Image (cartoon, rainbow over all chains, first blue to last red; front, side, top):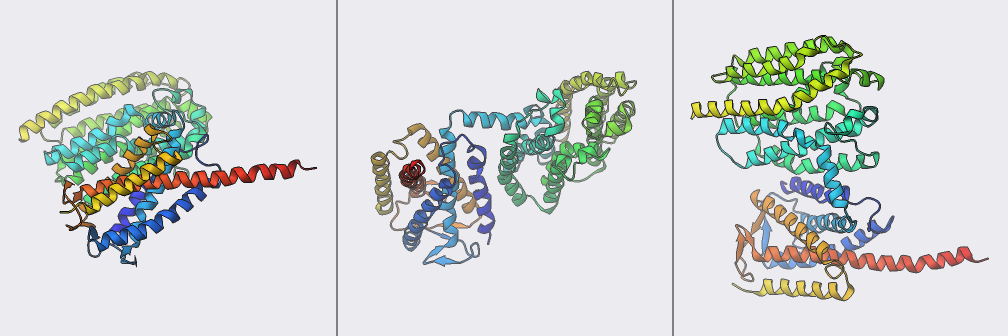
Length: 393
Length: 119
């Protein structure tokens, strides 16, 4: 029955051009004629499949492994064989019609890439790759597939869901249109949601297949955090404290997933490292919410900062950073040096320890500094990782 | 080793090309677009084959009608040609259906309009 689990993955993948590229205006047949064209074509292809595949299986070109298929057959042909013509019909005409509209492909790719926040790709891919490589010490297929997943599809899923459900409040916030977030038109919402799920699906199918039960659970928690943060009905981003914790899960869970997938031992140092990373992320999310206190209150949104107020939130962030630094002291050498890395972050939030709710937008300067500070810190963390790698090998 | 299957596939493929050119369906309609669609289709089905082979679902068997040339483990050259054929066939069939149903719609519409225009 294994094949019954593969077919849906590839059928879903085949639907990518139909969901991403075909929308008005389109050279596809209008109205109900498109389904009629595809239905008629499927009838023709199904008949041909019965004829051809009976011949091919009779001639012994291919067969299926025992126990993988349902054994429902038309002649010699298993019903599973109809998946190929079906997939061809979902994939190829949609691609043909989609590519027929000039600039559609480029515009779609641009929207999806902008939605996924390329600036943030490294924030999720790097923790995964570093955790995995530091544990296994080798480059292999799970590393490549996992890194690719946490680079683009994961971020597209996260920010795509976020942008669609944040549409109304983002409209009220002029800061969200630029480098810190793409503001997408309502007409593209369906394309973004369906597209981000479909693009993530093959990666997830593969990762669930190769990882053990523990890895699968980490991935489930990670995906739940991605959805729960902004999806309607859950909206964890509007629940004070849960917002910071969920956001931290977005960045720490790829690292935890990398460790579990690689089969790491859970020593005190590893736990302290993950906990420290988690607190650092919570601090950063909380500090990031400070600049939006007024905009969020005007838009009727709640966050850790609207509930605590701007100033207490900055203090909370400072305490989280400090605790994260102290946790680094529990990691094996040269890990404790990473404690020093929280000092720039403390210095970054220090000017806002006296911020008022009315003047909250002044924290935006601190947020911009935070964004490039991450690149410097990322570089230094990499140096530490290489150093600890050299000590271990 | 035999060229029977490969020859049969190439003959079928040639049939597709003739149909394409005579009815201006696929490459004859827009060669660049058709090439891209065909390439994506073949790569998509090759990935599917690789997944199926990797999981032990698809079994390639040595056939006395095939050349035995392999492009990759478990993937004979005939499979690649078959996938090109499958994609070409699919697009030809879809484009023919489009022409057929499009023409019917075009025939129906003026009549419908005449009825509306009639006093």
